[in-house]
Length: 285
Image (cartoon, rainbow, N blue to C red; front, side, top):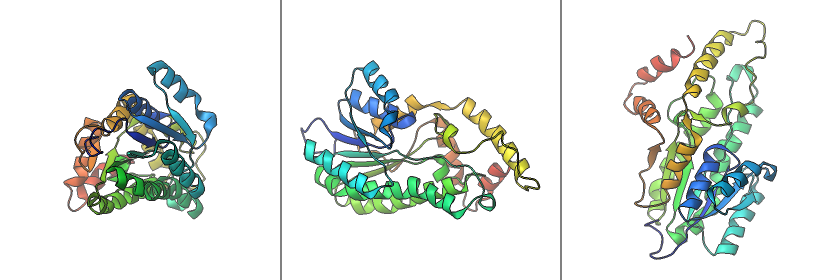
């Protein structure tokens, strides 16, 4: 990293949510680039895929348990990294969980749970890491989503959490830049990972009698299935994330594919919101 102290290698990188998908591949790519990677996950019983990938790539990872929703877990992991390596040069906030539903058909507690993982988890890791990133003039990279830019039908809670992360990071960026820390949000579009399968929704379950949203949900699921059939690979998205650890300081906002750039561009050019509403309304017609 060009904004780390000159001549110091390797860089020490903490990556959350590495049991699968983007996090797993980002960890492997970062280790291949020569970084010391602390790869974390909520449940260490899920290490097999990561270990197999590391063996295949010929790299070594420091794998630790980290539940981003547990303050003590966050504090202990960050302290443990600094205690062992003496520094922390970069954090990749990747841990998150999907969610599908609409507010009339779910509880407030379900919405809070989505916010806890996808927003407050990011805030907690960021808060714990920042003193050490200031010391190293390091990088704070957070995987959000195109759903953090464009609100999507039946993704209200998930998109709200990702919008919150983007607002938090966009506000934080100039503040910590003055202390030598760069901030980047990474916005993948559709990525072929187990993330989609873990949204906690069974598309084969019968709709409630009289559910006014059933037809729209069926249309949305059909479109989503088609979209994810041609999704970007998790490996290519993870490589984009890992590349942000090296070279010049990256821009604040980065997309992982041309499709993601095109999609986000609709919102960024849509001053009155009409273009987005026309687009997303068509998904549930």
